[in-house]
Image 1 (cartoon, one colour):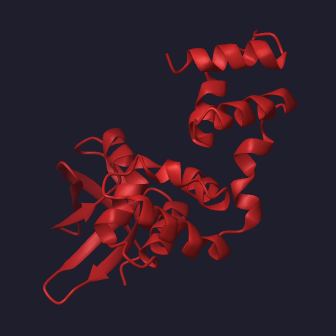
Image 2: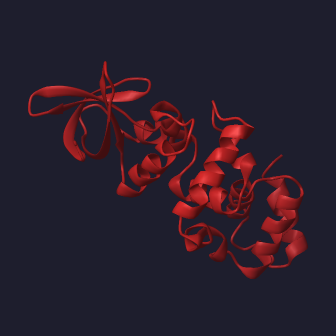
Length: 191
């Protein structure tokens, strides 16, 4: 099993990298956000997962052990293969995935190409017992008390928890603390 690679990036393709390891060029499929941060010629460390098939050996690379761990959990879900699991990590961060699973937010997975309602339900059902309960609470517990109410209000309006948290982060630091004003400013994020 190839667990990690420390390599120089030779080329960046649409969904993968060609990295040089000991004079050999290896193709490694990576999440889109990671690809956007890398450049040709950079040295990088990738935590990898090797998928062995009858006709191919395919490497998938991640910038952290956490992302690789979530990838492996997703592979354990019935109906989620290596490419779809990579699409999930290209769209959502590991924390967003954990939060969506623990809060049973099907709508969060709607943003992932190739995932419909049934697959989202499978992901949530099959991963709930594999993710510690405290993992999904971290992003919300860091919010001020009034902002927790704003997240609840935005969720009631149909926004996902992740969208609500993004809206709250867009509120100016010097904004008033009352819930009504903060909700109005958070709604402005969507328009």
